[in-house]
Length: 132
Image (tube, rainbow, N blue to C red; front, side, top):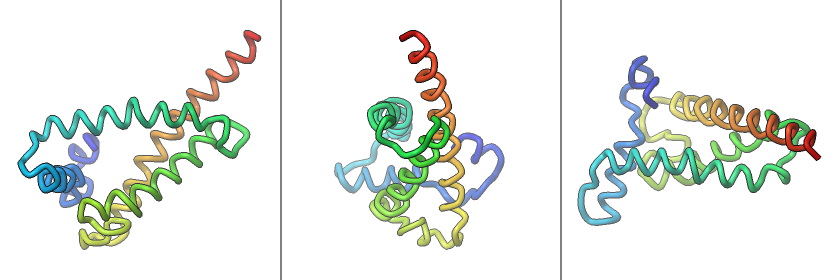
């Protein structure tokens, strides 16, 4: 998202602002943007990593990268079919009036992260297997 902002990609697509407004409605008051950024960072770096680590052995695919791709596509579908509608963006962020570009951006963002995570898990799995 930092890169998106600096590169000027989809400047009117601001899901964190939508998340802030939805959280404000849920809790009845405004929430500092820094808190929401920390929640998003914690979810992405900790919760998603733990979920991926738990599901790794069950994900289809012969390599960490392929397992990461499957995980990323599943995450993208959850984000676009559940999370985006919950914060008022509609399925695949179609309510933004930007066409399918926000959905494609979120696909690129999630698959990049999940491919990297899958690659790391694949290396860790190989090194653990070598120690046995």
